[in-house]
Image (spheres, rainbow, N blue to C red):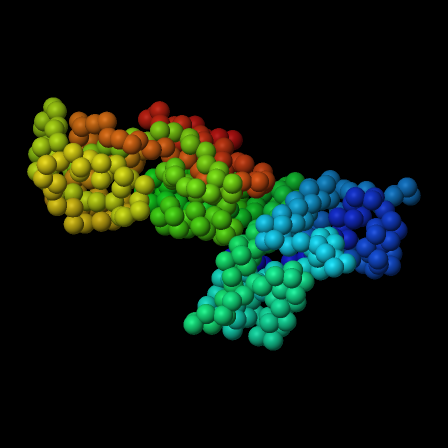
Length: 413
């Protein structure tokens, strides 16, 4: 959840005020700064983001094309900060307005809180973001005093963030990422087709779909930086909420927090029973439950989406067979099946991906319920960049191609 250094919130507030009031003098009065100080803040911000944000005219100061892009992201950032403070329970009173509380929050304070929430101790957090322990203490304690609510609690293992403090750290860190996305969008508008894509791939279903998508995306955006995190659905959803990744690709899961997470199902992916290509059961025209219980199985890991279907299938068997191997890895499953009479469940997508090697066969049994869908999970209220939207377009295209079981020769331009 560590947040990179970037423009100060003070400079971003000055920028937002100039963009709203369309004048340096008016903005200077509003933020209680001198006109030269406002001009200096804007000049420094433009140097940091690498773009001219305003066009200076005789009648005022107006946003440039790049400035329009960056202003939209900056406004969203401030909106998300206020939303995070409201959810945390910050309230005005005793001569303090909500706006004045929000205005006193600084980037170092947010970085410090995020580092403590993500680390094992204050010392660990200070090392992680490269500041002294005293500086970290000062930043986060100033934030705590400003908010008027405790952010930390003492436990047997040391001082840690409260649950509310950890949630606030996550939301504030996500808000600050709007600045990064704004910079990426300005670069894209200038013809620099780059940016950063951070995506989570659920075991099996996510990984094989991502490969052709990433290949296509990097052809369209040669300078894009792609990071792929693999793991189970629960872990990846948590990373999504923390802002560590932008999307999760894989089987659609059931979860309670629909206010923060949204899912897009792209294609149905029923489960099928799979064996090696010359398995004894491949010679039968029709498979029964009795046939299936006569062989050992490779089981999904506990918590895996397919585990529900697997357990439901085994519940139909009078004498459930041995399933003493559990794995997520498709390559491991393929090797285990190739050299034994074991059986397993794969989604139809996974089987279609693997059958090209000729090692596996789908047995004539089913349907197996519940069927699941392949899709993408992302955060609610997040505005994707142009590159992120192209990624979604490519995911939809490749999902449809796999579902139709046709060769993927056409590429999205």
